[in-house]
Amino acid sequence: MTPVTLVAPPPIPRAAGSLPLLGHAVQLFRDNLAFIASLREKYGPLVEITLQPGTRTIVVQDPALIRTMLTDLGPSLDKGRFFEKMGQLLGESVVTVAGQEHVRKRRQLQPAFGRPEIARYVDVMRGEVNATIEAWTPGRALDVRESMIKLSLDMLVKTVFSGSLDAATFRRLREDLSVVLDGVGVRVMLPDWVERLPIAFNRRFARARDGVRVTIGNAIAALQTSGHDTGDMLSMLLRAEDETTGRPLTEEQICSEILTLALAGTENTATVLSWVLYELDRHPAIETRVLAELDEVLGDRPVTLDDITRLPCLGRVITEALRLHHTGWLVTRRTMHETRLGPWTLPAGTELAYCQHALHRDPAFYPEPLTFDPDRWLDGNQTPPGAFVPFGAGKHKCIGDRFAMTELITALATLLRRWKLELAPGQTVRPVARATVRPRTLVMIPRPRSDTARDKAA
Image 1 (cartoon, rainbow, N blue to C red):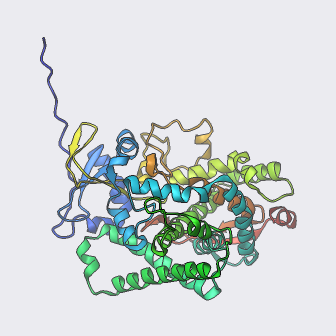
Image 2: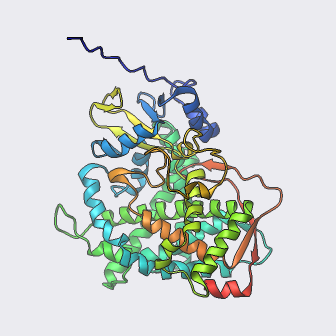
Image 3: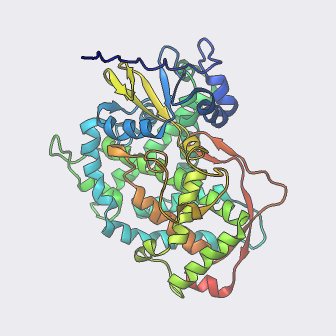
């Protein structure tokens, strides 16, 4: 009998440039997207970087291994550094916890994302889009991302709080959320000891974090006092029971879940909307096809939930934006015990990470990866499993994926029929990665389509 020779896997390479106490923070701060994107070209399927001195962070760059990490290994992994930083703000929410606790929280939230609830939200979303674009002035420069952030928050406030926040509270919530999101993105890149320094950045982050929790806590208390079921997500959470104790969720638990919705639902939605508007202006032939589809499918009426699957051209535009401009630049997991990933065995406490933004631009899987081409999705996704993960995968896949797509299609189907947005002269639009990958600046000029289109979209 011929003996079997076991070939040891090659050692996992370590990215150059790590510094004592700082790890790879300098490269990440200088240009985190370029640094992460360069790793695959230089090092292959796995590479080690240092985010926190004394802790191994393995960046997974092979689609098959990413799929294994998210699906097969998903239940046995902790959420890792990025979600740990989010947890400092959110507490224990469906986003920040793992294992059976994640499963329980997911079941509690699932009813809020069912078809009947989403159908109800569409009318609310459409109304907020119309209110936002009514305020635009033809020919006056518009900070598109800021406008989309405001729109996303407007939709959030109406679907989560039934619009119960007054104007001053709303403005404060918007400002605090912006500070918190930027702060979380920066803290992922820095060693933990930097967070303890008595500097303005840390004080500003702490004030904003506390302010967000106070705002949401006050909204919860007001609804509890009134006893009125407003039919929104907040009311649903107030009716929910803790599976472990059989008691209603505590204010802290509800606050954590609402914060999750606030952070994920505003920043990501606003960013994708901004990138779609940018790309449609750069590709007028694609925009013409989208407008023709909207006219054919919707005619003289507003968009409804039933139309979401009847707008494939618009759907492909959004899918391509999620590929080329994905908002996620570093998603993490952590091994809780010795774990095998492909041929490699990783010890407990190893940080795992992958970058959707870099993965979705890999020329090995996407011909002409920097070209915005919605038609690459005409025949379905032909990429290897794990090469396109816009909402993650496995048991931790984004719970709000259908809600997000409905929100994006509703907003764009309403907005595009009324306004054409043109990039303001002299701009070079570049991505910047903090909590999400967004345009550093995006100023556009709104031009009305026509009075007929205005009537249709409303």
